[in-house]
Length: 109
Image (cartoon, rainbow, N blue to C red; front, side, top):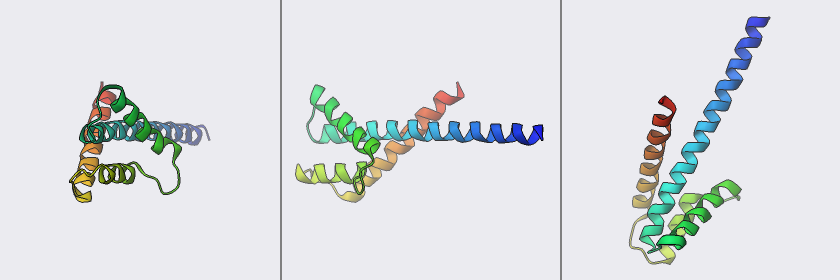
């Protein structure tokens, strides 16, 4: 029975570790994506930092129907930034890849 208990504890620890990594990747992705959007919107300094925080908070609050990607698309359209939704989504995915790489490299240390 001890072996089963040890495996169960190991599984729980692995699950928690994986969830923590996913959370870190998501936050890093959102920060990178929001910084990219802030630059397109012409935000600099504190205004850019506030915008990044606002975008990260949207994801953390997890309001129904409100996603980081959709929010940024709306903001860029409202600001009349000439860019397709497809191009914005590509940047979102690129930010995810960069975040994943950055977080996983820190894990290997």
